[in-house]
Length: 477
Ligand code: SF4
Image (cartoon, rainbow, N blue to C red):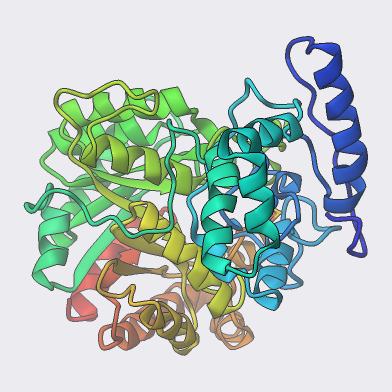
């Protein structure tokens, strides 16, 4: 974090892959000596400091460049390294304080690894020359705000938004009129939709998987398959989705940025579309830190979920790959994202959600909710930003099967908060814990049915697929 803030931790700087010319090496050294201690700069070579309130976002272990993940701890620390503040929380707070909040909405690109570790000051000088040094300096010292912003953007926006990305802060409605799936059709129709998830198997034996799909399919509109949740390898969401599709069910494919790359994402989507998979939920994914040993790299992902949405939306609506090649038959996609309404203050969470919607999210699946009333301030913030008519929201609900499950979720799953009154009910229930868990889930669903902006529920079964039928029946859905 910036040297101007307390409790800083300055991660090591990146280095270029190839040997740069002496002058560039020298500039890079001077740049690091200045920007390092001041802003926490890691020399990503793709500088975004102006958009991130002059705190380097690359200090985030997940390399998030478009806002916080859903894992901030209640103390606002990073869940990957709980000994320090979440860098994105600090960025949001400082942006609020300095009136820079709207700058947080611009969709920022992933790293261009050809530039990582190299200086950006030379690039700024080159762009200033292109604009005209006199014109640039004149605009900077002039009192004309509009002129200053245009000239400023001609230098800095050109650098941070290369032609292959073209990120902005605008909402882009989908370019097609017809729904691409039954899931989308029902949501557009105004139905209160029920989706669920089936836990992928840990071996290639699909007996249990197909049984579970058959068990839940008649009672829900769509079935999610998690993508190695909690960073634990299982059968891939892609395989499970294809199996479900071939069985006549409607899958929601989940893709975690943690296990994908920009080329892998695009190839997979084209291939999966050819197999009839149209609903895609883009998530950043849990850090390997919460997965089993040996722990994989905890530093820096190739993409974050906002970037995944932006790439897929452009593939669909503009018919182009990230490298600019045209796609003759663009993929059909109904794009979704996960959100964690209680991860931070509702006002801050709404900024991140706004960005996901601008990037391309058409539906949200929330983290598990056990306090329905606590959701209202978040929904109000989305409403204030006129987002409720641009997104379908499905609330995450889970029947707690035991006290142990409740304790695990509360303690280890980022963004899940189980209030003390719910924990007490589960404790008191003893052997009747599964029954109490179902009762709690039904109470949550009941309150959700009448909330403005809520379009359905997403039942997270946590391996208890046989309970879906009962929950759907008893909740009157
Ligand atoms: S990993 Fe998540 S919690 Fe940690 S700094 Fe990054 S955004 Fe914040």
